[in-house]
Length: 270
Image (cartoon, rainbow, N blue to C red):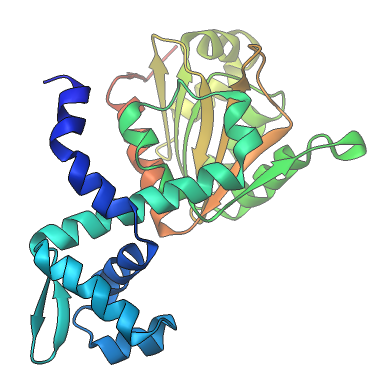
């Protein structure tokens, strides 16, 4: 069925769902807290009881919430819609917070299913180099890398000191999984052959190759993700990274790594 037909079927629901900020806030609160009274919602949200009761009447009429003698709670449909609302609001915050970053980079390296979950990167900041600190993001990455025991990365680029840094991490016991493009693999074989041979003999290192171009470079560490992109004009933006923290961001990053891992080929010797 065409997307327009789906919209026509859901139009009234969508209008009801989006026209009232109070309704959305109540649904998100009930999704988090479970059953609550109107008085509890008033105290918790600082909204008048009359306003809450009006919203709850609409929600119960539409079978998004139910009332019992103990208070209000969401129905199964209400819980699902609250989850969708939470994802949407988180995504809007991420996109608005870093609008210039998302507008000026090529995000084709992120499959659609990961774009719809972009709200999982809500705890994030842009590290952007400028003037004498042009490699600020690079320096931050190396600092976080030094503290991490698990390193999972995908990269279509290679910086001069990265092979040595990765080799030291594996030698010191960190678990390193790296997925690179064919172009990067060829450079590693030509320019860093001795280091690569040593790494491939390490039980702590796994290397994979992709037979495709990738428009994003990212590394998932123990406590953060470093996410970089090519600019719209085609060049890789070395001086600007999106640094994401929190359990949701780590989960998002690991799922993205597994996506590329599933379509890559392991390299065991050269």
